[in-house]
Image (tube, rainbow, N blue to C red; front, side):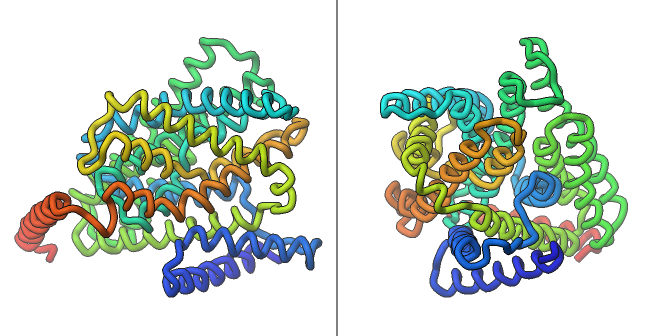
Amino acid sequence: MSVELAIVAALLLASIVGMAARRFRLPYTVSLVFVGLAFAVARDHFFPEFDPGLHLTPELLFTILLPALVFEAAFHLELRHFIETWRTVLMLAVPGVAVGTLLTFGLTWLVLSGLGSTQPWQLLLVAATILAATDPVGVLAMLREVKAPKRLAVIMEGESLLNDGIAIVAFGVVMTALGLDPHHGTITFGWILSFLTWEIFGAVLIGGALGLGLSWLTSKIDDHLIEITLTTISAFGSFLLAEQAHASGIIACLVAGILSGNVGATYGMSASTRVAVVSFWEYAAFVANSIIFLLVGLETAPWRLFRIAGPVIVVWLAMLIARALFISISLPIMEKVHFLTRRGLISILSWGGLRGGVAIVLALSVTREWEYRQQLIDLVFGAVLMTILVQAPTTPLVLRLFGIGRERGMREEAVMLRTRLRALAEAERYLERQHEAGAV
């Protein structure tokens, strides 16, 4: 099947799954993965030579799909709320990835060694690095479906958007340390320091410059088509420029998205243009999200995963325990989330830390010459599926267990009503300003 026909077929299938999921009140993303798995099983049994034509390659995910998802989420991320939770987000995104990698690796190695498994430590270290960070694709999809409270959603969104870039940087360091990255030479402390500095701060500079520059351009024109084009350049241009400069494309896209949403959209767009821009990016994110989750299921080899079910479950449990331990230790530094006890915050942040397409693509990007490549792919695929098929559908239950969801308390309802009143008052003032300026 040609790539063009495969894309049309994927969109048609995603639409059908979406309608069925809405009709039967099923999680959309989980339904897509199940459908992809069903197609994978049918293909392996009845059409083993069939090539769907569309695969979850690094080029497809990192160049096309992920920038759209990251930019759309960052565009809606209010800078004020992000600043209010910056300690928590940075704790989870930076030291959380490093500590999570070490704890996951240590726990997995200890348990599998105790059970007599022969999994090499290099394989477990690379798998732990890939799986250390939550995935923006899975987390953003889950948050939209469960409708989490704003402050909690900002923490989980901010972490997933930021730590994905950090995890990719950490993955590069580990691959170089193991001699599996042909683009870098011998690893030293100075190399690690300069590599991390440029990957992170270089990306912030590139994303910031492009985000602010194009936001300034949007203020000079009132044409929704041109302004949609400028935001598209901001999203993909920041990513590609950062990658060309050997900085983190995801972090650059994140910064550009935050600035476009909080500066360009707020001060440079009319109300009608903003609606058009938001609608465009919501659709782009929907398409990217649908293709990713469908391909995650389609790329999986279920029978191979059954043979390594034991190690997969150990890795998955180690991920959960490592995340819960780190959150427990760092909780005193984090900002408080209203209506959540210490136990509730630990449980929700730990259980809601999904993994997704980024982890799978990182595993697929490992050089084919490495003898443990196929084992790594199977472990990562299995752990990702556990988070999507077990954690994602049960996250609403965990939220309700700690008083978040449909059964909100009177105090939470009162705060929500006050927040809505403030939002309505602010919207009224904004519309009055737009009316005075002749935009409405």
